[in-house]
Length: 146
Image: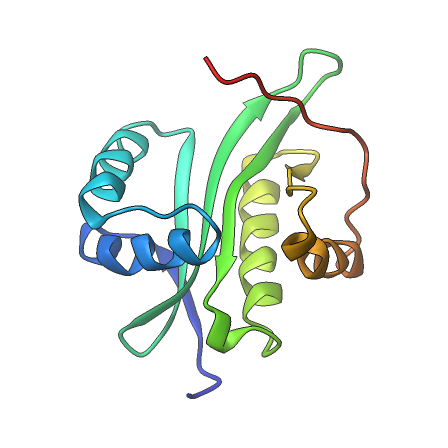
């Protein structure tokens, strides 16, 4: 493992490695499922998928969307999915990837980056990571499966 990590936009050739990362995030999936999802988000200019690589290995990903506030002026970037390969955690990979997300938000003129993180025990480390980077807990999320 080197410390030369590069952040770039995801490409179709990354899909199989993305499926591994999304599975590590707690959402088991196949490469075929991720390909369908990737094809959909790639066609919308408000979405962006960043990956961080070590050589040819995709070691992290951030799935992003630009959004518009209803309750105030401005725009934001929402992190829809964020994961670093288990073998690379604690090496600054996540910090570098978050910095790239924040840089994109600034480039777009956004006034915030927002994200949701589950309230499960296995997410406690992620919550500490986000708080350590200056993110605050602001709300509770709700979902109803249909």
